[in-house]
Length: 75
Picture 1 (cartoon, rainbow, N blue to C red):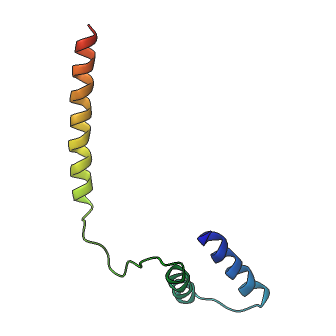
Picture 2: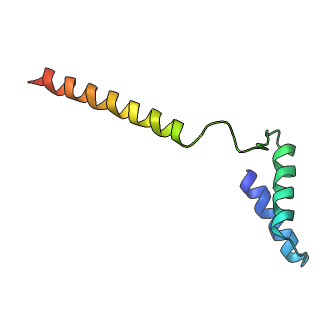
Picture 3: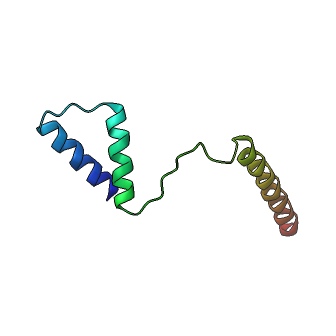
């Protein structure tokens, strides 16, 4: 629904030959999100890229360990 609203707005701007710059699109998207009750992320976030990578590696080790145990029990 958000995409449809955004595209409808873009179509209207094009039909009216209203020039829009990237700054304008960002502002309009923020307004659209707020109207739909969405919280805006105004900062870069708190989690570094390395943190999810570490978690992924840890989860992969656990999955592989589980698979090895499962395969041993089948024998």
